[in-house]
Image (tube, rainbow, N blue to C red; front, side, top):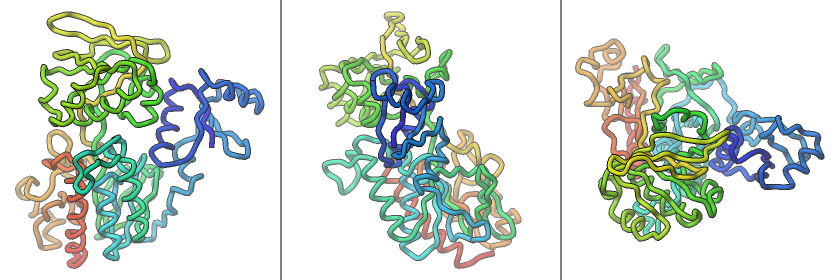
Length: 412
């Protein structure tokens, strides 16, 4: 498969990101730098206005196809039977969702995992997870995701991508997960493992440069694009630290913008030591991004410092690691959320929840990872008060399966 387009095209970025994160082999041809791209467009009489295009091995081309089209073409989308009742539907295939799929399927439960973009979640984009138990040399998020996905499928779990759930409810004693295309998935239990969504900068014209110079991950693909250039990284947590170390191998200079005066405020010590030991990394302390410049794609970032004033950094690549918010817009009105939008479970649920009709009908209180809807659980980063770490998400996903068994054993 070949993808032809501009590196600064948001649509082309989305297609490449989807292919990369799902392990789909493809060849990228950049309109700005690759002569073959122009030759192919002329050969197949494809207008430049139709790009980005995806071209198969037979020369058939598709103008800006949807991610669903690519997923279906690659056999990644499972057949949905609305009459089938699943033991467990897992919404989200990050570390928590994949762990639940592995443990549930290995114990004989019929499992369907629905993922909107790519298995692995945020952890899947990490260049190196250094502190994951059992991997003293570290493991990349892509490797961990690939192995977990193979393991889940080996035990019989179905993982369908892309597949987005828009709402959740209970009907006739069954949990109903409704997809964006209107398909209704019926299940005895549901696990919410949708993780979080990246925060954005509150600056003018921000949306103009998303996927056209602004990125939220720093995988091998983004790093290659930055070879020999200057890049800007905003954020001082562990994700930012891993990205800085990785980008410094390719970029001429990495500018790091943090609000605090000390990198060690939110970053693990081992990462701080690595970052501070890199000669091509410049840390701008006590600073914040105040503006963006460019035409069609990002060309400069304005940084404000309370002591020294305004500074303009010339760059075509801005990487943001400024935290994340719960990915729960689809759950509002379905389950109880905390004030920040994270899913409440077990003892954190509002008093009196066990006295509602749903809970009186099954005669028990919510389990530790259970939401305000019986038989609906939450695990990983999306859960209120969870530890936002890959290992803890895996643990919660595995733990949730024991509660699934307990719920199925005593149905309403």
